Length: 118
Length: 114
Image 1 (cartoon, rainbow over the protein chains, first blue to last red):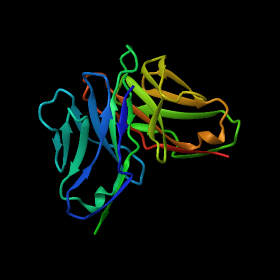
Image 2: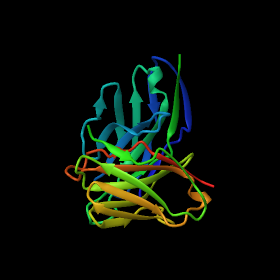
Image 3: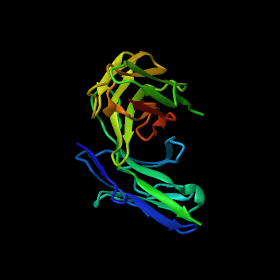
Image 4: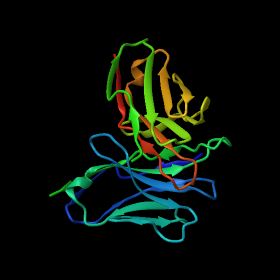
């Protein structure tokens, strides 16, 4: 079974500061994928960044980067120069294989509520 | 742009009613998913489908069923709605081409069972 742990239920950060959102995971799979999603108050889930377990470099997408430490089983999201629009729920997720049929659902953490203060 | 559309944004139903939540995607994705989201619990997978008429149970399938008669449409069915099924329901779809492709989500249906 896979498990995602996000230990920060909520965070307050000053605008323009960098933010690190923690994510640790547990899996017995050798090959896996890690995702971060953002969910604003409007409710839609927005994909931010992906890291594969065999990727040698940490993933980056604009202001988002993923601090992947495989031995520690951690995949922290770093947001540089935070903006007011970054206020949202953030979910870490892991791709898993449920059956040989080809579909693979995501296992999600409980989320971190990030609030950016002016 | 990939679009995943859920038929209702808000829904209020009575206990015991049969409830249908509809989801349509326009990108010819093979895989479709239903999640429920509850405060403090994150998203939990209810059912998924990897092909027409194919379905697999997720982590919390009890009290739910699904239907996938066409590739673009995936329906979640609450046979007899109960108050503990009050929740936000999210549909997602994903292609099976590459393992690093993300799932695309609908806007969610907030269901209240009274």
